[in-house]
Structure formats: structure tokens, C-alpha cells
Image 1 (tube, helix red, strand yellow):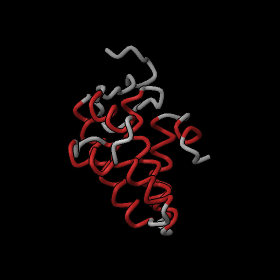
Image 2 (tube, rainbow, N blue to C red):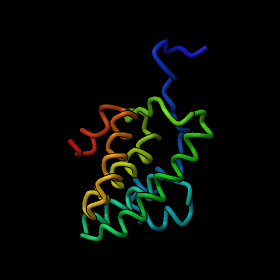
Image 3 (cartoon, rainbow, N blue to C red):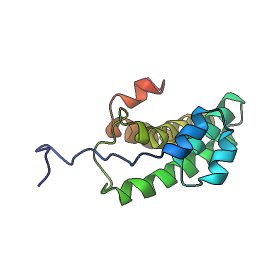
Length: 136
């Protein structure tokens, strides 16, 4: 039985101390992705950097990689395809950042359907996430 009578319990990804520390210490996200290719936060950082540089196609590809690697981890953590993925839980932020970057890149290349899908998914994961990530 779940502790939440209104739906599934929040999914909390496991802590990833080494790659998180590498990014925090200023290691290039490409190097972090090379060393830990399943670490969504590195892919999200690459996507955000590409968006800032005006390269939405690269951003889309990086963000999609981070998004899919995050989905794999969410499923391994018990997520069933729906339910809360809290922004406040630090290890979830890489997945949510990749999802937000995918939405932004999709909007930039006029992929309205993907933008709407990702924006909705982000808000359903945690209503605080779009504001925290500047999508509102």
C-alpha cells in the first residue's frame, strides 16, 4: 500500500555523488557524460549550453539523451510512467532539467507537439519545476 492515498508515492532517484561533484567542481559536462553516460544532469548541462549558444538541434539531441537516460533510472526506481518526480530532490533535477531543455529546444525548432508534451510532463512531475526552470 502506498503512503499517498491520492496516487503513487514520489519517485526519488538515487544520489550520484561522483558525477554531481564533478559538475559542481567545474568539470566540462561533456567529460562528465563521457565518464558517466547514464547521468542525466550532464546531458542537461550540455543541452542548456547548446541552447545558450543558439544551437537548438544539438540541444534537442543532448536533452533527449538525458531525458531517456533519466526515464530508465526512474523506471528502475519504481516509477510506473506517472506520478510525482519532485524537483526538491536533488538527484531528480538532472532528469527534470533535461525534460525542460527538450521542451525549450522543441519550441525553438517549432516542434509544438513535443514542446507541449514535455511541458505537460514537467508540470505533472512537479508543479514547481517549470517555475524553477524558467518555463513559466
